[in-house]
Length: 98
Image (cartoon, rainbow, N blue to C red):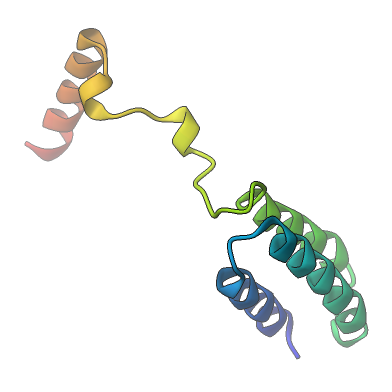
């Protein structure tokens, strides 16, 4: 198994897990166990640190049990933009696309 195959496999499992807090915890535990077992097959031993970072980062996308966009809380609808920001945004868009 290559590193790419490994990460592809755990990502596919992540996407296919149910939207339940328990399922997210089970996926995280199983993925860490798989990472530890597969470590012997990888040439790059720093993959352990990278793998753990990826697994823990993916878990944050489903902390409350539901898959969500972590950037959504930082964004707002275009209709809710202040007038001064709309003017700046409009000028940027015009210079880029016109």
